[in-house]
Length: 375
Image 1 (tube, one colour):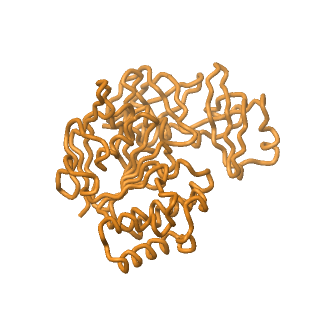
Image 2 (cartoon, one colour):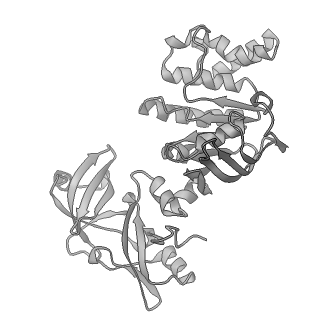
Image 3 (spheres, helix red, strand yellow):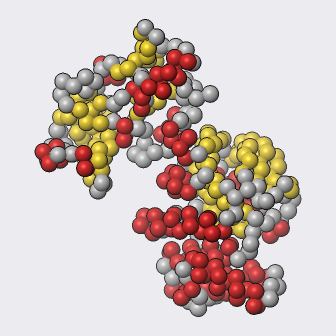
């Protein structure tokens, strides 16, 4: 068992700044949980409290059912991979990985077996006699992971391990971490500011802001049903389009009228509004860029706009448009869906039409910013 439980965990610094507020979370054995949020949200501080690198101001941290508040990091059964790798520059890769085992006075034959096994899993066997300066960033990160692997720890902690890598290498290392997780079959707690990493790696995501938990859920739950406007805009790339509009109730059905175009809220979203007996009035409407589609002039629900910026992303275009009232929106359009004539027209200043269906809309209270459709 390698469960982790945080109960009312709080971090207050000497200047009375509260970095983490009453953090409650149960992490199951062998679960991969990602803490994600903008810089300064408290995610790394929380991880460091679990690791024992930060004192806990209040609350308790349990690992495998044992309260570890007063235990030293080495006694908590955790292994940690840092953002800056923290390798010893004068040691070889082999010695870096073996270092913690030698401190524990593990026999050399056991050390050799553990180090070579970890190196084989991570694909760094050919680099065992090299010094860190002779390695690329990705190779150094594998060494740091290998050093943590050989400790046979209950919980694996990773603090933004990919942030120093370029985009291509980050993508590669994400896939390798997924494979590593399958091989190690242990509990992972991973910190990142990158929502793409969170979505691709996690069993569950913990989204944080200003030291508070905004939402805990699977990637699908956080994407499909964000609990508040912050989560809605943070998860998803490009971020969700949001605008204020009126929610209209007529004959038991709900409608919105953005940019003067009346659109029925149908499908599951309409049913939920009816079930909750949502009141008509001002709402914040959210629509993800991939749920907006190009329309034809005169088509029902077509919204006129002007193309401002066209970002070519390979398999899709990110169209930055503005409507007649000046509202700016982002539209994701798969390039395979475009005709040759449409592609030629995707230039700055070109007038086009967009639309979206009621079933893809999200609704937020303009005062509390809570999702109207979640509990």
